[in-house]
Image (cartoon, rainbow over all chains, first blue to last red; front, side, top):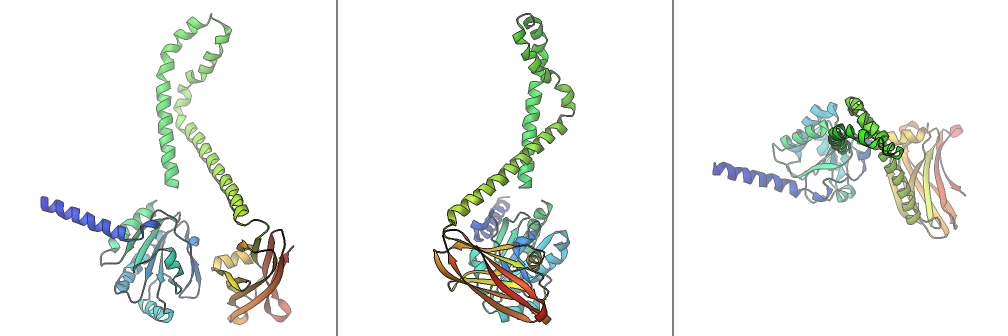
Length: 166
Length: 217
């Protein structure tokens, strides 16, 4: 019983730690608007998705977990886009050509945008990669997490379902 | 926001419900003796029973009270929303007046007429060789401009005197080719606010887009 309690406390601590590692100043605040060029040549503006739940994933090619995370997000996008979820992947790679090659090899179903000047990254107070944010229908950041481990998508799904129900 | 409003409505209706419930038993007992004793006292006392009449009549409306309450609350919420919008508008005007006083204010607008020979992608604005705005247009925004929308792309301050504004337009030109053009204007900033319009039009005889800057006096 004590062991169980201890495990519970540790798990809760770990979960809290994951949450607090994210940029806390953005939680509960309006997500900074941005307009970026997508891989297909179109421009995408965040504020145009007001009224939908938006998952924003900042990634970098050199971050080892990005590939796995993008695959998981692609699966989420395919499943939930009809329910009103929009997934946006933002590359913060300075080398846009290599980032483009990487994204092409991933062939994900959601738009990949390029923040080569890292201007949006500054607005979102990015310090580590990857960073995943969930923005609710009114444009407020409701969930953010830094890093990715296999299985983290379950936590994303819980949050996404809750936000889609609102 | 919606959730907050819903919670507020629920709380208010709960409070109203409680107060209505609390009021109902009270008039039931004292009211019967009250007119009996107070009736001969004076006609001046007539208003209280009259005033209490609605409470005495309260039970019948109480049956459909939820719809009435909801309607009133809804009206109140709508009123509050309107107040917020009005307040926001006043605040915006005040902020503009404080941040961009007329004697230094310069506002730049973008408009598009026809646009058959040009699909707008971005506009860069430089004043006195300093970049003040770089705006990327989404398909929806470009469409809004084509439908007659006018966008305020920049609002800032410049000193009184002569200034130069350069605007670079990028997009797709005729035959889907990448297209980049610039337009320049030298304007005199006086005491009043300065309004400049970046106009994208079609030069039909040449099958080319045209980029103009208009100085609104």
